[in-house]
Amino acid sequence: MIQRIQSIYLLLTTALMAVFLFLPIAQFDTTDGIYSFTAQGISTVEAMTTPVQDSAAAVIQTSVFTPTWGVFVLGTVIAVLSFITIFLYKNRPTQARICMINAFFLVTFYIVIFLSGYTFREDLSASNISWTAYIVMPFVALILDILAYKAINKDERLVRSLDRIR
Image (cartoon, rainbow, N blue to C red; front, side, top):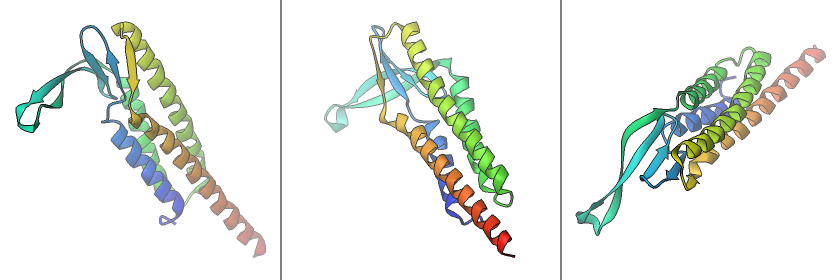
């Protein structure tokens, strides 16, 4: 049962959330400079030019001044829960229930990200907030989690129909 399609969906959800924890979520433009918002925290971003590559800018992150533990912990819980759910294939009802709990956590994760982003925008007095394209990764993980839930229920219906035949 571990080779079923829901295992692939859950593994992709785990990978997306694990990668998302280390990517920038948004950038804030302030009068002091540019700040980067990641799951670990908010840090200042400095652009340095390298003379070797025709003045191409290299971005260096410096000192994290505000940790965002809520975002990081919730993202980690989602990734770990998705990974653990893969191995609950012998108990499909529990596996389906945990998928729905994980979907709830993913929706909550989005709410926490946006509330944190707009709160930090106010705190930093930022003129602009630029969300990165990586912000769609939890949404894709949510879709994959829902697809896993549907596949688990499909398997459960199949097993129950075969039990009726006996």
